[in-house]
Image (cartoon, rainbow, N blue to C red; front, side):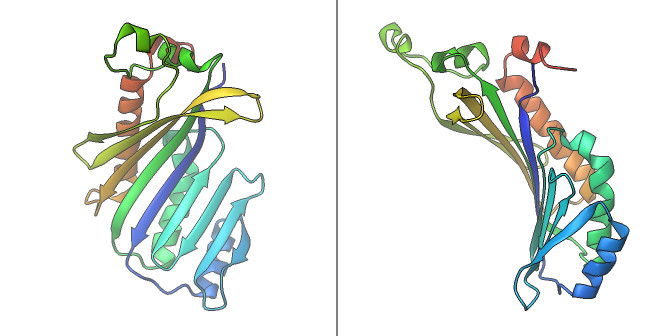
Length: 212
Protein backbone atom coordinates (compact mmCIF):
# COMPACT_ATOMS: atom_id res chain seq x y z
CA UNK A 1 0.00 0.00 0.00
CA UNK A 2 1.38 3.40 -1.02
CA UNK A 3 1.46 6.26 1.51
CA UNK A 4 -1.37 8.75 0.87
CA UNK A 5 0.84 11.86 1.11
CA UNK A 6 1.24 13.52 -2.28
CA UNK A 7 2.44 17.04 -1.60
CA UNK A 8 3.83 19.20 1.21
CA UNK A 9 3.69 22.99 0.94
CA UNK A 10 5.34 25.56 3.18
CA UNK A 11 4.23 29.21 2.98
CA UNK A 12 6.04 32.05 4.73
CA UNK A 13 5.00 35.70 4.86
CA UNK A 14 7.35 38.47 5.90
CA UNK A 15 7.86 42.23 5.61
CA UNK A 16 8.71 43.45 2.11
CA UNK A 17 12.34 42.83 1.16
CA UNK A 18 14.49 43.79 -1.82
CA UNK A 19 15.09 40.99 -4.33
CA UNK A 20 18.56 41.69 -5.65
CA UNK A 21 19.74 39.35 -8.46
CA UNK A 22 23.28 39.07 -7.08
CA UNK A 23 21.92 37.68 -3.82
CA UNK A 24 20.08 34.97 -5.70
CA UNK A 25 23.19 34.12 -7.69
CA UNK A 26 24.90 33.55 -4.36
CA UNK A 27 21.89 31.54 -3.17
CA UNK A 28 22.22 29.29 -6.26
CA UNK A 29 25.92 28.79 -5.54
CA UNK A 30 25.34 27.55 -1.98
CA UNK A 31 22.22 25.54 -2.94
CA UNK A 32 23.35 23.76 -6.13
CA UNK A 33 20.54 21.20 -5.81
CA UNK A 34 18.06 23.95 -6.77
CA UNK A 35 18.17 25.14 -10.37
CA UNK A 36 16.95 28.66 -11.28
CA UNK A 37 13.81 28.38 -13.41
CA UNK A 38 12.71 31.96 -13.93
CA UNK A 39 12.79 35.50 -12.71
CA UNK A 40 9.31 37.02 -12.69
CA UNK A 41 9.36 40.57 -13.97
CA UNK A 42 12.15 42.99 -14.78
CA UNK A 43 11.60 44.73 -11.47
CA UNK A 44 12.68 41.68 -9.51
CA UNK A 45 9.20 40.74 -8.27
CA UNK A 46 10.11 37.10 -7.78
CA UNK A 47 12.50 34.21 -8.44
CA UNK A 48 11.69 30.53 -8.99
CA UNK A 49 13.82 27.40 -8.53
CA UNK A 50 13.35 23.68 -9.02
CA UNK A 51 15.25 20.52 -8.15
CA UNK A 52 16.55 18.51 -11.09
CA UNK A 53 13.92 15.81 -10.54
CA UNK A 54 11.15 18.45 -10.27
CA UNK A 55 9.97 17.12 -6.91
CA UNK A 56 10.97 20.33 -5.10
CA UNK A 57 10.01 23.84 -6.18
CA UNK A 58 10.72 27.20 -4.59
CA UNK A 59 9.13 30.56 -5.38
CA UNK A 60 10.44 33.67 -3.63
CA UNK A 61 8.63 37.01 -3.69
CA UNK A 62 9.10 40.38 -2.04
CA UNK A 63 6.74 39.54 0.84
CA UNK A 64 6.56 35.76 0.90
CA UNK A 65 7.89 32.44 -0.32
CA UNK A 66 6.50 29.02 -1.19
CA UNK A 67 8.52 25.83 -0.81
CA UNK A 68 6.82 22.70 -2.13
CA UNK A 69 7.73 19.00 -2.30
CA UNK A 70 6.02 16.26 -4.31
CA UNK A 71 8.38 13.55 -3.01
CA UNK A 72 5.74 11.98 -0.74
CA UNK A 73 7.75 12.72 2.41
CA UNK A 74 6.52 14.69 5.43
CA UNK A 75 8.34 17.70 6.88
CA UNK A 76 10.33 15.51 9.26
CA UNK A 77 11.97 13.72 6.32
CA UNK A 78 12.26 16.94 4.33
CA UNK A 79 13.77 19.10 7.07
CA UNK A 80 17.45 18.11 6.52
CA UNK A 81 17.18 19.41 2.94
CA UNK A 82 14.82 22.29 3.67
CA UNK A 83 16.68 23.73 6.67
CA UNK A 84 19.73 25.01 4.71
CA UNK A 85 17.43 26.45 2.02
CA UNK A 86 15.39 28.40 4.55
CA UNK A 87 18.41 29.43 6.62
CA UNK A 88 20.25 30.79 3.59
CA UNK A 89 17.17 32.63 2.30
CA UNK A 90 16.39 34.32 5.61
CA UNK A 91 20.04 35.34 5.87
CA UNK A 92 20.50 36.51 2.27
CA UNK A 93 17.19 38.42 2.18
CA UNK A 94 17.76 39.77 5.72
CA UNK A 95 14.37 38.52 6.91
CA UNK A 96 14.26 39.51 10.58
CA UNK A 97 10.90 38.02 11.52
CA UNK A 98 8.15 35.84 10.05
CA UNK A 99 4.66 37.31 9.97
CA UNK A 100 2.81 34.11 9.13
CA UNK A 101 3.80 30.49 8.59
CA UNK A 102 1.73 27.60 7.26
CA UNK A 103 2.48 23.96 6.49
CA UNK A 104 0.01 21.92 4.46
CA UNK A 105 -0.20 18.25 3.46
CA UNK A 106 -2.22 16.94 0.51
CA UNK A 107 -3.30 13.31 0.89
CA UNK A 108 -5.34 11.01 -1.34
CA UNK A 109 -6.81 7.66 -0.29
CA UNK A 110 -8.03 5.46 -3.19
CA UNK A 111 -11.61 4.16 -2.83
CA UNK A 112 -13.19 1.03 -4.27
CA UNK A 113 -16.46 2.96 -4.28
CA UNK A 114 -17.41 6.32 -2.85
CA UNK A 115 -19.35 5.02 0.12
CA UNK A 116 -16.33 3.00 1.29
CA UNK A 117 -14.89 6.24 2.74
CA UNK A 118 -16.40 5.05 6.05
CA UNK A 119 -13.70 2.38 6.17
CA UNK A 120 -10.97 5.02 6.24
CA UNK A 121 -12.30 7.99 8.20
CA UNK A 122 -13.56 8.55 11.72
CA UNK A 123 -15.75 11.44 10.55
CA UNK A 124 -19.55 11.13 10.36
CA UNK A 125 -22.83 12.51 11.66
CA UNK A 126 -26.18 11.15 12.72
CA UNK A 127 -28.88 10.71 10.10
CA UNK A 128 -31.87 8.45 9.47
CA UNK A 129 -30.86 4.93 8.41
CA UNK A 130 -32.70 5.30 5.09
CA UNK A 131 -30.48 8.28 4.23
CA UNK A 132 -27.29 6.78 5.63
CA UNK A 133 -27.55 3.75 3.32
CA UNK A 134 -27.69 6.06 0.29
CA UNK A 135 -25.01 8.42 1.54
CA UNK A 136 -21.73 8.14 -0.39
CA UNK A 137 -19.32 10.93 0.51
CA UNK A 138 -19.50 14.48 1.80
CA UNK A 139 -17.38 17.59 1.39
CA UNK A 140 -16.47 19.10 4.74
CA UNK A 141 -14.14 21.63 6.32
CA UNK A 142 -13.02 21.57 9.96
CA UNK A 143 -10.87 23.86 12.08
CA UNK A 144 -8.95 22.51 15.09
CA UNK A 145 -7.55 24.91 17.66
CA UNK A 146 -4.01 24.33 18.91
CA UNK A 147 -1.49 25.91 21.26
CA UNK A 148 0.45 27.34 18.31
CA UNK A 149 -2.47 28.41 16.09
CA UNK A 150 -4.96 26.35 14.12
CA UNK A 151 -5.19 23.33 11.84
CA UNK A 152 -7.71 23.38 9.02
CA UNK A 153 -8.86 20.17 7.34
CA UNK A 154 -10.66 19.78 4.02
CA UNK A 155 -12.24 16.43 3.05
CA UNK A 156 -13.65 15.91 -0.42
CA UNK A 157 -14.16 13.21 -3.07
CA UNK A 158 -12.03 13.36 -6.21
CA UNK A 159 -11.63 11.40 -9.43
CA UNK A 160 -8.05 10.24 -10.03
CA UNK A 161 -7.28 10.17 -13.75
CA UNK A 162 -4.11 8.15 -13.23
CA UNK A 163 -5.81 5.27 -11.41
CA UNK A 164 -9.17 5.85 -13.12
CA UNK A 165 -10.96 5.59 -9.81
CA UNK A 166 -12.35 7.64 -6.95
CA UNK A 167 -10.36 8.79 -3.98
CA UNK A 168 -10.97 10.80 -0.84
CA UNK A 169 -8.77 13.87 -0.71
CA UNK A 170 -7.63 15.21 2.66
CA UNK A 171 -5.85 18.53 2.99
CA UNK A 172 -4.32 19.48 6.34
CA UNK A 173 -3.06 23.04 6.82
CA UNK A 174 -1.45 24.14 10.10
CA UNK A 175 -1.07 27.90 10.55
CA UNK A 176 0.85 30.06 12.96
CA UNK A 177 1.03 33.86 13.15
CA UNK A 178 4.25 35.60 14.18
CA UNK A 179 6.08 32.48 15.45
CA UNK A 180 8.18 33.27 18.52
CA UNK A 181 10.07 29.99 19.02
CA UNK A 182 12.21 29.99 15.87
CA UNK A 183 11.21 28.93 12.36
CA UNK A 184 12.37 25.32 12.46
CA UNK A 185 10.89 24.64 15.89
CA UNK A 186 7.63 26.18 14.70
CA UNK A 187 7.59 23.97 11.59
CA UNK A 188 8.15 20.93 13.78
CA UNK A 189 5.16 22.01 15.89
CA UNK A 190 3.02 22.40 12.77
CA UNK A 191 4.07 18.96 11.56
CA UNK A 192 3.25 17.37 14.91
CA UNK A 193 -0.12 19.12 14.95
CA UNK A 194 -1.01 17.77 11.50
CA UNK A 195 0.18 14.30 12.49
CA UNK A 196 -2.03 14.33 15.60
CA UNK A 197 -5.14 15.41 13.67
CA UNK A 198 -4.40 12.87 10.91
CA UNK A 199 -4.39 10.09 13.50
CA UNK A 200 -7.69 11.34 14.92
CA UNK A 201 -9.48 11.60 11.58
CA UNK A 202 -8.09 8.60 9.68
CA UNK A 203 -8.99 5.12 10.92
CA UNK A 204 -6.32 3.23 12.88
CA UNK A 205 -6.96 0.16 10.74
CA UNK A 206 -5.88 2.07 7.61
CA UNK A 207 -2.92 3.70 9.38
CA UNK A 208 -1.69 0.33 10.64
CA UNK A 209 -1.48 -0.93 7.05
CA UNK A 210 0.66 1.96 5.83
CA UNK A 211 4.45 1.53 5.40
CA UNK A 212 6.08 2.43 8.71
